[in-house]
Length: 265
Image (cartoon, rainbow, N blue to C red; front, side):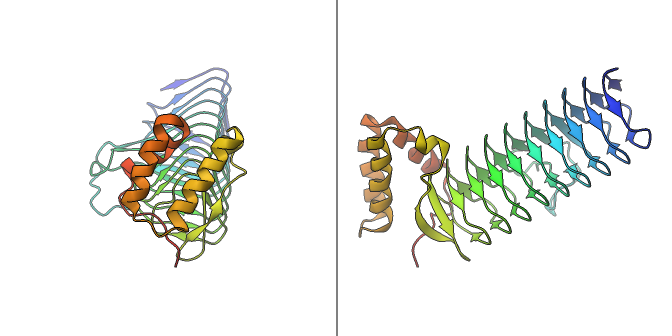
């Protein structure tokens, strides 16, 4: 066990031998930190939280009370293999969070990037990959194997089906159920979710020059408002990408998309 002398751990909390606790870490009352856990400098753990398994947490994260992090996943094939959960830096995580470690049938790891905001009662299932700067609202969850790209935003009380891919800057409206992939910058809403325009508030979108923003609107129109086969749209995308690198975000999305994209009813 390695605990920095600069860490502050409540007397009622249990830190098992083998855990590594960095400088300026704060662990509130009645927490349990298991043997394989690494907690980086400046991270704060709320009271009554359990951090389990081979879980690595970076710097300056905050976890609300009653969180369950790195717990056994809900895949019935899991047989206690040494899979992992890796969390980056500066993530803000509300109370009652449940983040599960990966499976050997998946990527053997659940991966969460940096600067994400997860509100209360957020669930991250096994083998998910969450990028940077994302947001997930209260009582929303990602089933197993979901990929949530940078700056994607999910409202409250949303459910994301397993193996779905949500592209850069995608936005899921409150109380939506997503069962297919959502392309970059696309807004999805409803149960089952359908496309509802472009997320023009995404930081990545706002950073683009206007002609590139217009190009994304044109591409959305090709996808959803013209009678074009998907393969025709993909071919047009290849031509656009050679002159406009931002369109590479769509190409990257399609290389990972296996469930088909959301469509108009």
